[in-house]
Length: 370
Image (cartoon, rainbow, N blue to C red; front, side):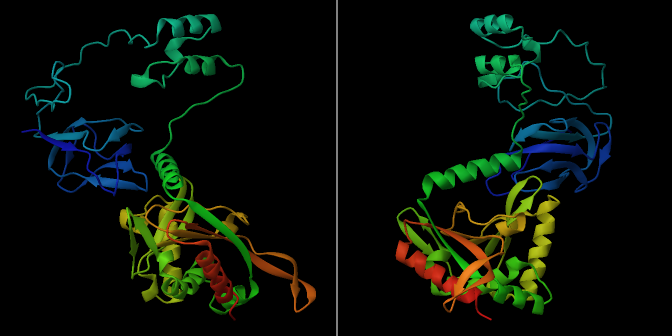
């Protein structure tokens, strides 16, 4: 009997995934819980195990294709059994299994005619654009005037769909900017005390030292570890600190859970592990969600000041820039010193300007502490 397997939701808010590669070809056998297919979600590349043992009869999509959650991913049955989708089944109905011998597929017919309105076809003719070579971006992949004009431009133009990671980043950034009234305050802190402490500790990741020094501040300023839920302010008594990772597939946030219960060395080891997992696209869903405050070390990529966007479900984010040398006034004298540019964005619905400046002043004091 053929068993249908639909794409499961393996992460919070997952709506779609891209098929990276199949570990089992149609006609090959697969064991229970054996890796069946590798997919890319908005956070990582993961293997999906087979929930059945048997012969793979059907693959729901080819490599590189995007599938929605709950779409038919695979059909697994008995040796010698075959399965095809019924051609006249109602839209949305489950495909029906067909048991019997595998027959040769009928020859393919002519390719379908490109979907385009008459006015679009006329424009394509005027511009000398072959509609068969144009990928439609309209509803139902209908070819639009813009698609034809882009194809007819003399300058090279490329168009490609967003990856799941980039699409998720875009959606979340847009929603955060739309829902949260951002305020960003800027300042600088002397860098040498923290850099000296880092050398004395064996050069752990800078994020580890910043996180360890932030924890007492978050306890003293609980609104920075809180979030707005409707008409409520939710203050959290735990500290799961996120930090930004510049991964090849896009900017990701990895989370050091229960950071207040870890030493600097333990936080440093966790930062290294999570960053490696993010860059190799192996970050687990639990390691990529649930942050209560976020740190972004933009100095690692040469950045200084910025206006960081607050992650959804939090109230603030701290961006630390590159510690360049610059002239400063020290006890009435002009000297050259390295300073950290600091950019603190916070949710103005629950954090007022005075509280924001108070947090920044305490942050500077703790970073400059010997």
